[in-house]
Length: 77
Ligand SMILES: [Zn+2]
Image 1 (cartoon, rainbow, N blue to C red):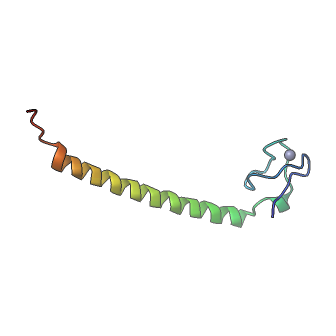
Image 2 (cartoon, rainbow, N blue to C red):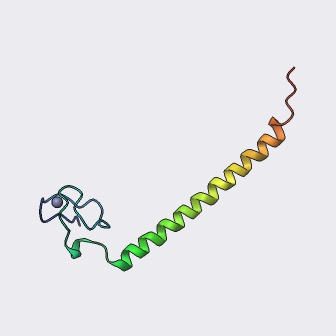
């Protein structure tokens, strides 16, 4: 179900924005997320960001380990 701006008729791209991204008119409350919905979305985003951070830290650690094992004592021959 696509919500549209009542002022310009364009599809609402982000229901977290209170204003239309095209014409800047305030959007009606029924086309926006409720506070609870926004909170749920933000909680999910925080979880995703945390998971990504952990993954990147793990990868950095693995790369550092590889470098310590293989890249450390290169004696130019
Ligand atoms: Zn609009």
